[in-house]
Image (tube, rainbow, N blue to C red; front, side, top):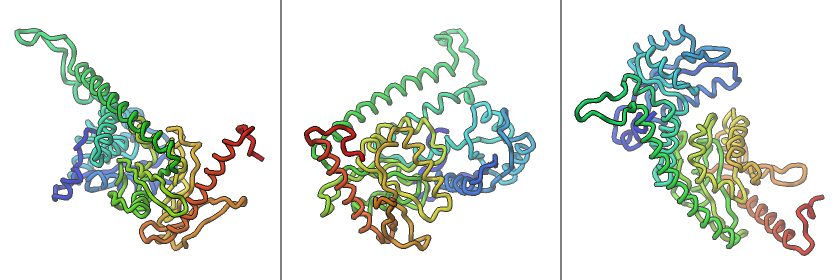
Length: 392
């Protein structure tokens, strides 16, 4: 779906009417179906849609032509017409053929989960780099679906003023998109080189580098603001932050450190988006420590942790040390503090970024992490040290 398919944040703030939508959440036997449906509603609302109805059903596998069965699609068409919705949103990834077939059957635009997430990112990106990354991801996704808009056009015909290269509009569009993708990739390459220079400068200064990661709406930006007083945008909505922000922070036990607030992850995060944001996510790959922020009040927190770790593995950050930060303890009644494993190492920190409870425990945990890094660096520079010399 192209950017602007839903009202932008500015348009919603100015009172622009939201777009009526019917959601489709099919159950394929996953044990988190209810949570997935709730997440779909949150995504749709975050994109600026007004949810008018939700159509559900159970299937063992997707239908090759319509994704849902023909009977369910007929039901969907009736619900859509009765509700007066202008868009149908699926909580699944649709093939281009399925999307075209569904649009003919229900009589309106059909959006899948990937397009929905891309649209939210397009609305939220505010930095130049973020906008370039989102546009690249959208173009790559759009290039596989161009036939939807151009199937009615025939090859260009000859005539005075009309004799051209003889290519279809589809071929022309693909060529233009290919050119634009090349330009955007070149821009991102320049931005990536700039980030590399900045990281090398921080490494020479031996500044501890922290990166906040976690599932979307886990409270990363709220924690970032609580630590750095940066005033970064934070809201109780999915993907409130899509641009990476880095600030310096001074802690008495550590000195100067850098903290980066990154985009949140989610189940089914589009691969094109991960690839486009690779330059930004390099901050995560090269961090000394990842603060993995978890919504401790969520009933699906363990699955969310797994989803975040999948994305970290995809970008090559699976070996970066992690510190679990259980946020939002004010919502589940837990107390602030530090949990340790059998070896005495910190397993997780319990806190509330909103109230500030447990922030001192996090600072203590960061001091221990910095001390551990300094000890590892000292051992690595000792004469006769080998890679495994300190392993018992």
